[in-house]
Image 1 (cartoon, rainbow, N blue to C red):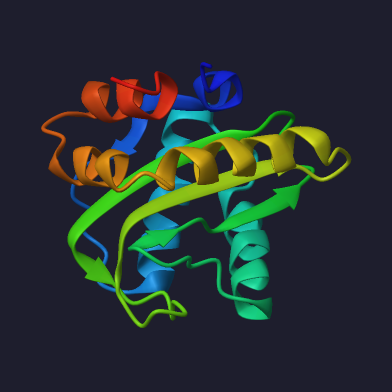
Image 2 (image 1 turned 90 degrees about the vertical axis):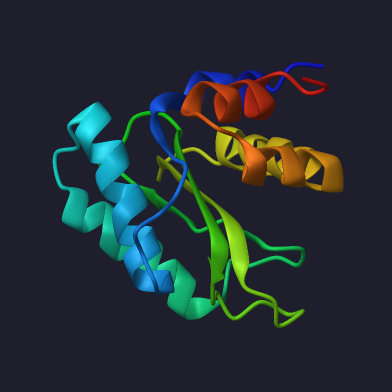
Length: 154
């Protein structure tokens, strides 16, 4: 099964193979600005604030080096995704105490929940596989990351 919602929400221009960020907040900011550079958000600062507020309520870090910071706002009219890889990892306060190497930022329209939840489910299902996580970390270009994210089994 294809990851249709990820495919509709992610553009290779919103993939950074080696995040410059050293902290959680810097990583979220860097990914929001990737989305802004591609989609010309009306207010990237508001998008950043929504995601940071969600992160302050509860960490979006999962185990196994994954973080999925996300938020909902009226600034966007569809789900938008950015992917950042940080081989050395960034502390996202994960439950297993490990740094996050794969950071996937997701922003969705505030008024609808279905696509937000489906996209989170697609991302979670994809990253359950240690093989997929390793392929993402070892990817040499954004197109490869895009294919891994959108075509399971690549």
